[in-house]
Each structure stands twice: as C-alpha cells, then as structure tokens.
Length: 101
Image (tube, rainbow, N blue to C red; front, side, top):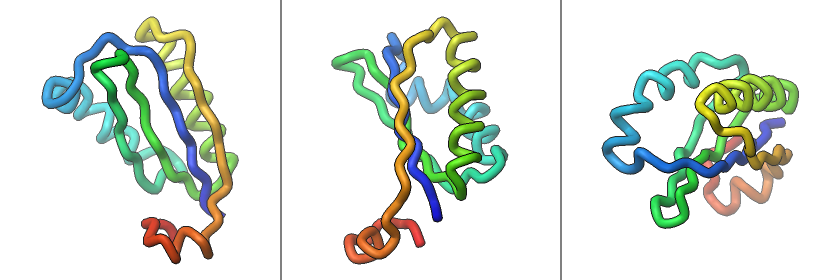
C-alpha cells in the first residue's frame, strides 16, 4: 500500500522560477530517497508557505523521509513543519484518476 506525506511550512521565498532554479539539486536528490515515488511541489508567495505532497511505497519510508527532511529544514532555519501521513485508498483513487496504483 502506498502512503501520502503532506508537508508545509513557512518560507520567505524564493518562489516560482527562482524556487525551481534554487532547488533543482534538492529535487534531484529527493528522487533517490528510499521508497520515493513522486512529489508535487507546493508554494504560496501570498502567505509565505511552501511544501509538498509526496507518495512513498510504505509508511516506514514516508516516516524516515519526514524525519530526515525535518532535520534538513531545521538546518535552513525552518523549525515548524506541519506534516501528516495518510494511507491511500487505491480503489477510490483509481476511480478518480489519481496517479497511484
């Protein structure tokens, strides 16, 4: 069963194209994490928030990534990270064309 990791936190930028340029190497490293399937990057310049929606193969790999990522964010001065892990209901997700099987 696959799991969703939902993460958001306050960030003062960069956003948009500047964010894409600044975090390209980070995005490439995330692809190599154990159990990682995909990520949607989220941002809101209006509220100074960023984060992502991740899919991991197992709950354990999602938890391991969250622990590592929270420590990495703390290194960037981001101490308050909102995060939730959810199991995916594959049957209903398939009906609504979610990219998860």
